[in-house]
Amino acid sequence: MKKKLVGGYKPQKKSTTSVQGNKWSLLLMAPYLIGFFLFIILPVLVAIVLSFTNFDSITRPDFIFFNNYTYMFTEDTVFMQKVLPNTILFAAIVGPTSFLLSFLLAWLLAQVPKLPRTILALLIYSPSLVGGIAMQVVWVVIFNGDANGYLNSFLLNSGLIEEPIQWLQSTKHLFPIMCLVTIWGSSGVGFLSMLSGILNVDSQLYEAAYIDGMKNRFQELIHVTIPSMKPQLLFGAVMAIVNTFQAGAIGVLLSGSNPTPDYSGQLIVNHIEDYGFTKYEMGYASALSFVLLLFIYITSKIVNRILGADERKKKLPPKEIDENILPIMKISKEEEDSPNVAVSR
Amino acid sequence: MSQYQGNKVNPSHLAVSQIKFYLLLLPMAIFMMLPIIYIFTTAFKPADELFKFPPAFFVKNPTFDNFKMLFERMATTAVPASRYLFNSILVAVLTVLLSVILAVTAGYILSKKEFRGKKLLFEINTLALMFVPIAVSIPRFIIIVNLGLTDQFIANIMPIIAMPVGLFLIKQNIDQVPDSLIEACYMDGGHELDIIFRVIIPMTKPAIATIAILSFQSAWGNIEASSLYINNESLKTFAYYISSFTSGNTGGIGQGLAAASALIMFLPNFIIFIFMQSKVMDTMANSGIK
Image (cartoon, rainbow over all chains, first blue to last red; front, side, top):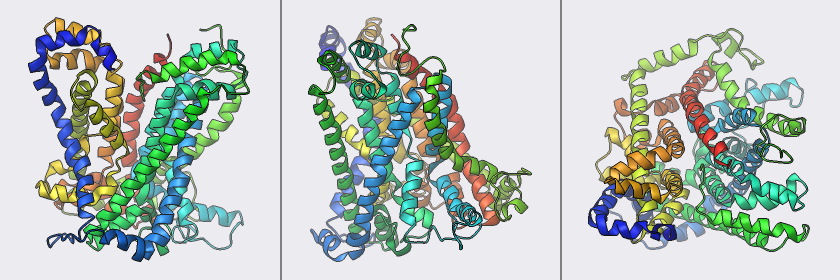
């Protein structure tokens, strides 16, 4: 970026519009920065500060240092036995599955011509357009606990079960259903980004790779497509993480109660709301918020590491293909180093 | 380009060899669509079909009864249903406008200007892509209260107009705008605003469309503001109202109402996406060809 700007344009600009330019820069930047600070940065800071207090939303908060955290990890048995394992399991199942599914679908779509691709992409993207409330409405009816629920009546009719199952109230079934529903709605922005990433891989790279001895679609995927769309993959991964944690309320929406039956679908987000808005222990709820943010941050670091590590591996000459393909790898590497676009270009 | 059609991504014609992809894609698309088809059929089911056992998936005699009932039922409260709908539309339009303006102006500066902390700022913004509003609902609530925004209409809008994803996308796209164009605009005596309107916006339309879609979705389905920051019924949004009265309504008539309201929530998103995203997808697909 910087290199580009130096070439002829920046010095000139400095001499003519530097003072005025700075004023305008600030003015144009300010509205976003204010909104960004007030509703994204500040809440995080407030959460950190409050997490060291016992704020009950009425009386002045007292500093109690790490008491909230010690309580969380030593005395809050619900948190340690249910909420934390649930959250980790949920993230471990939903995050990778939705990411891989989005990528797979995007890749499959890229293999068909434009018209069917556009229609199918629209169909696959549409669940993420349904949104939280509507999603709840649909799935609650499908998994309704009486014989009138779609799944129950289907299973009853086909003789697979004898009695209707209380899907959403059973501690056994709620969690898998939460995962299913979240994955169903997860092909969103990340999916679109990956689709355009695959479509925008320079077709010359493929041609060159085939000339140099690449044989099939699998090699094409591993040696050309994936290395060329790393920015989109990372973006997709971040979106998958956000989507996973944003879906934290799903268990409560489906079961209709917070806490969920026997805490079987309780995630950190529900625990936060339980303490914050039901029990008014804002200090403790803030400590939980901070732990959740930390959790998201660590997850993204891990994802970064994984995608980055893949990249490092690919720089080494792969064994199964001959060395002629190496020049192509180099090209695709340069391609992805250039400030590439996530969704469109 | 056209003489080579081996195993290439983005083919231009239908071919027998593509059948295997359809065999994988179609079941997935159907699985994705089933709940949505369900919304459509159930929303138009008359009462006797809603109570039928076993439930039929498709509707036989479609009616608008559920929609009528939805609005009648809502009209019995102090605030008419049309008011909620009006609020929602206003919130969505203002949010889209403001979030696009904020993202474009900030994205332009962040992409094309040099200043101290620029890199750090973009890194923080990229980190904030992972921001999950639901995680900090309590501190956000406290901030809203302290800003005196409770029971203000703008409480629906303010918290969601600074979109890290929006800034991220637009900045990445503005990076692709050649500096020479901006330089030329300077040479013509152009002002910063001229550059934004005459160069940046025309060159980044697809990204702007994408941001508009994303912000519309977040505004249209947002119930956080109405349920936490606003107590005045006449300032709440349609999404909130639907959610407050469909929860716990799962059998018989309730099912029809729930599906009708889900359809009302889904359709605007869907229609806007069809219109705007077809354009975005065109641009995306074409941009790869040299």
